[in-house]
Image 1 (tube, rainbow, N blue to C red):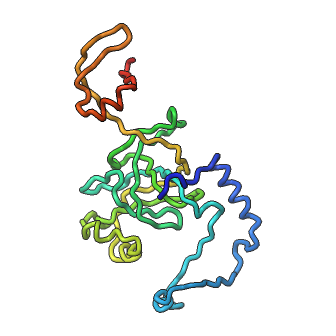
Image 2: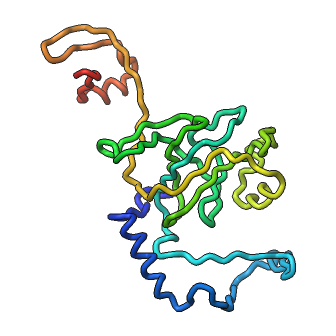
Amino acid sequence: LDYARIFQFPSFYRAQRRAQFICEDAPVLEGSYVTIVLKNVPKETMATWHPSQSLWSVFGLLPHERKMSVLNYTMTCTSQLPDSVKSKDRLLLQHGFRRMWVNPTFSEHTHTRKSRNNVYKFERFLRPGSTSVATIYAPIQFGPAHALLFHPSFAADGTRLEPASAVLDRERIPQVLGSHCQALIASGSLGGCEPTRIIAKRTVLAGEIYKVHRRSIVARFMFFNREDINWFKPIELYHEIG
């Protein structure tokens, strides 16, 4: 996915209100019976379809919901698995009517207004009982939209299933869900579409004080790699108190 083609709204909530307002004047109203004609349906699908047993769900998309962007979900961990859930682990996401494999990146969730410069601390694990923000690449979806995260390697009772590498094929999602009841690890809702959200990793730098000046100090033995030295040379590092 080319990051330069990620779609960004000047105002996500304004675009959401406008898209929902346009659909109020749709030619097909709620509760109406319609006839849908499908083209280019694979023969394999028709061979396995039985009108008395099969049920197809059809969803309409609002404007912009076919475009790719960065979605942020506010998720609360509700499971106690023997293994910890790490950032960028392969998980199964059910959000709204969509279901897909994702590798979410977890970051801190603030209950108040945005943090300064829209920067949030990266979280390596999804901690039980805590609330985090899961950031993924996905098609745009307007809210309200609930979200569920499932772990493909564990069943609902916590028992380990087959290796995760054997069930990560995108086309096998129905088989994966049909063979076992997957472990629900987190639930939440859509927080917004915000590609400008910055997720920063916190790194502790240690060094030996070499010289002390009135407003600054010179520290050594902080870096031992030529590339790191050249990169940090023009940058002034600040201590937590100055």
